[in-house]
Image (cartoon, rainbow, N blue to C red):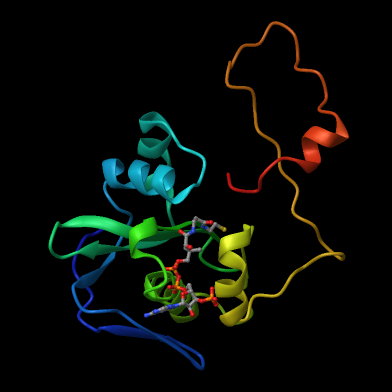
Length: 183
Ligand SMILES: CC(C)(COP(=O)(O)OP(=O)(O)OC[C@H]1O[C@@H](n2cnc3c(N)ncnc32)[C@H](O)[C@@H]1OP(=O)(O)O)[C@@H](O)C(=O)NCCC(=O)NCCS
């Protein structure tokens, strides 16, 4: 699942969508190494994660892939799928380093993940994600549609102190509406 062999094909196809990998980059199955994962999250503007979180999270991916810049050997784009293998597939950690954005790398990563789901899931799988602003046009191009108002994403962050003496007060509505979905 997390092996690091290169995918030979320079492009991936999902339905009518084809995404082409620009020259100088290599698509690699599996999550990036922990150091690259932490850098990719932070530099792309997603909330930074700790090494402890990354070490626990990455092996829990159902599938993942990343794009390596051949000149440096470092990961410059990534995406992961959390899933049960049959019905629920949740795409997370879509990120491209700023200086490598708008070259089609996000499309290649998303297409590769959707290819794997299409190949392995039972027919009728449910693929979903929480779309932050920068990703919405990309996801829409691949066929994702908004689920609201029938279903809205809901979430909560657990306290950072695992043994709080008193439970945290409930957030005000202003705090909730200002909360980014970029978890
Ligand atoms: C969202 C994100 C992953 C997209 O990655 P990306 O590599 O820039 O995506 P792509 O290049 O495939 O597509 C992005 C745009 O570049 C355009 N593009 C693709 N190849 C291009 C090229 N060779 N030249 C110019 N533009 C190109 C696409 O048409 C697309 O345009 P649009 O957004 O106006 O429709 C990236 O912007 C990112 O990491 N953002 C910060 C983190 C984030 O918000 N992640 C999403 C969390 S839900």
